[in-house]
Length: 593
Figure 1 (cartoon, rainbow, N blue to C red):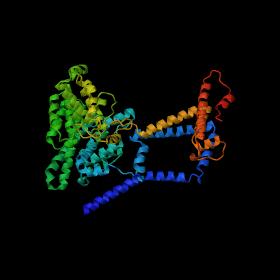
Figure 2: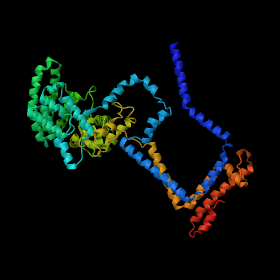
Figure 3: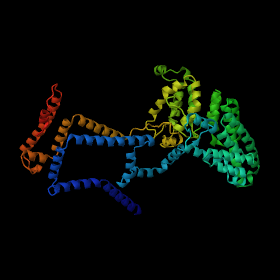
Figure 4: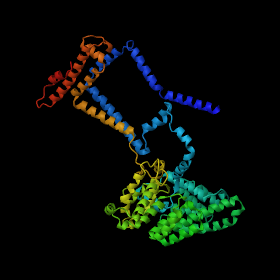
């Protein structure tokens, strides 16, 4: 009984919702019916006659002003809509309509019930979408003082956004601080330094902490932000390694004495791993690639569980620089696993290795004649897999878009990750003969397999819709963010563009041919109030209803309307005569009366 009662209530509710949805049509017909019933008391016919007389007395200057003003207003709306679309990726009018007007009009989301019924089935995909929209720290991030600041000094542009630097400050507080820092004066100073927004205040706090004792995190801050060259940064990191290694050994012996010591040991571990990783990156920047590879391998063996730093991506880039492709394949076999989160480095490096086997002899003409071999098919499939994961990368590898300095944080499958990958790996693709040619010939074929990437993917989950918003926060304003899939222009931009063009054309025609446009303007209103026109033909002052009209009256009305348009055509022909008539003659011809 309870289930039957609930079902009846649901049906009743749906009926009420349905009735309210279509109630406005009922009101519309009721208003029309009332207007028809009250047409005599309201003197609708007389009002229409008055409007017709008013329109007949208007001059061409009025129509020029009217159409010009309409064109100006629609042009301003078009400019604002285009600016809003370029900045936020959506139409302002559409957003306001959906967000504010639709709830007021009682709009109901038809998919709400379907989404609630299938919530359990879509929970996994929703969690995957959230994880793909997560912002990750760039494993190949540059040094602020030695690289980012030098770019600012040369170009005057800021390569890092406030949002990106704020995320880095949060990372530093997570990695380099713990709850017991207030017990040690130097660590207490550094705990405040990581929260400072002013770079000079952070550097001054680091120097103040070093006056107390050898503080590893103070050396890290100076190496990252004060050092102007990679060599200076490496020197400071070596000092940080000496201080950090001592703290790590002491906390390792005390980590089981309580939660406070355990948190301190975790902090010291993060500091030590960060220092060794940055030292390996310094060696890679300074050309000591084999030394950098050895340091990265030792670090991965010593701390195998610290995958948050993604050291294997640094190792892959260094091995590609050494052209040790067998070692690269071994690293990919370990990390290109379905249970681990993918990255552009993993997918595109796998595609590069498979393309390397066939790219030197690949020819599009020969492949179209004989078909693709097994090795070529594997290479093309690997490229399609990589492009599906991050479709922004090929334009940077093929140098169809200009590169900028990569941010300190990236969004997987987004434009920021594509910039970070291409910035370091473009040289490796150029080194493999024919690899970029194979990529150029095959990468666009990926989109034929995923016609609706936001709804369904081929090898990966559907492409997340949040990448554009996050990338605009991570990347500087002077960079044009790559958007996938390419958005079509909203309807309201096209509508306002058409309206602006149409009204501008009317204003121009009215200004150039005022008499001709006056004929059109005066001819059209007279055809609207039919009873008024027919009444004037019969020489009567009052309007007749359509029910009182006989067949002859209708014939007279149709004949006069045809005469008006014949006069218009005659006027156009007179304008084309080489010896034009005088203005008085033209006025006499174009006068419909």
